[in-house]
Figure 1: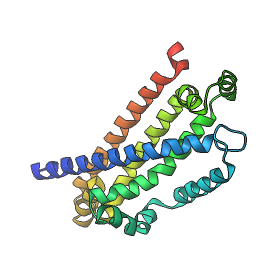
Figure 2: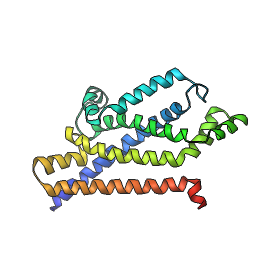
Figure 3: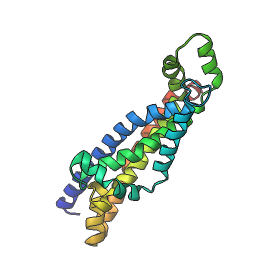
Figure 4: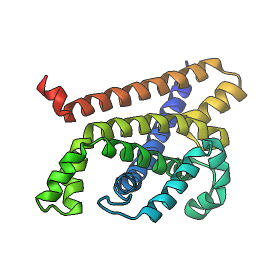
Length: 221
C-alpha cells in the first residue's frame, strides 16, 4: 500500500473519530437526562408527568424506528440550517447526533429502571430530594449498565459514521466507497474495514473494563 493511501486512511480515521466523538458527547449530554426523566416520570414516580412521558416516549420511538440512512436524507434541511451544508464531516454530525439522543435515552432509561426500587424508597424516607435521589442513588447504582450502554452507543456510532459516507459524509465510510467501491480498489476497502474493526474493539474493550470497575459486585469477587 502506497504512502498516499496510508495518508488518506489516516485522515479519514481522524474524520471518523471527530464525528463519533462530537456526536457521542452531544448525544449523551442530551440523551442521558432524557432517559432519567423517562425512567422517573410515570404516575407516582419522582418527576411524575405521565402525559409528557407518553409524548416524549412517542418521539423517541419514532426517531429510533426510522432507518438511519433515511433519517440522514429526511433531515437534510435541518442539517443545512445548523451547519450551512449537507455534505462533509461537520454536516454528518447532525444526523449522527439526532440518531444518538433517543438511543442513549432508552439505554439510560433501561439502566435506571433496573435499580432496586427499595433504594429509592429508603432515600425518600430519609427526606432526600428528587435531584439527590437521582445523583446519589440512581446514577451511581446504574453506572455499570449506563457505561455499557454508552459503549454500545459509540460502537453503533462508528457504524453509522461509515454509513454517512454513502451521502458524502466524509470519514472512513466515504473513503471506502470512493476508492474501494467506485475505483475498485479492494485493498483500500479491506484497510477501511480493518481500521473500523480495530476502533470497535478498542471502544468495546475500554467500555467493558470501565463498567467492570464501576460494578460493586465485580470488585468484591
